[in-house]
Length: 244
Image (tube, rainbow, N blue to C red):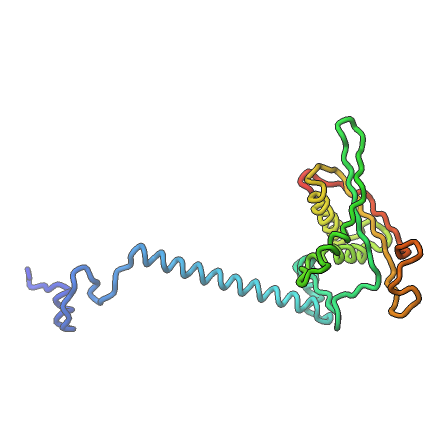
């Protein structure tokens, strides 16, 4: 070697007795390449997604647990955050033996209003939304939870917030009104063949469920239908151009 200075490869060969390979790192480690860097980036991204999914699942389980658990210091302190997370998609209202059993039957119908070019208001016939759900459940071995409970729970939640008055008194009441309206708008849009309408109105007729063995139980009234205990007509609700 010029000047008596040996290369690093020669020094490594004398130390280990291993013939150096051209282009290989003296210690035997491959120099980083673009492919290895991209592989590490992908692995880091996958780890981040897994951590995010686990954190979201943990938060969801914790919030739902605090929602259904008896009132405590933690659930009372973070009640606003828990309520915002749970309602309306993750509501939990299970009882000991059945989920919120009904003691009455309700028939929920809807009709729409559209302003014609001549300025006249055209109102559609009543369309039975409950009958649509019943027909989808009847003779279906595996009816979906949405078909069985979406409309029913939307109405009971609306009833819990409003009672007999249709004026909202809280932000949650406004949210439940919009939730019920949007369900009806979606179904009426599909029923009307996407014909435009500017307003929608709901009608809810409540029928009693006779106790087993009670007089008249299982038999229709003389008129051919049970006598309703309540016939509630909700106000007209405006529908935006986007259908909400």
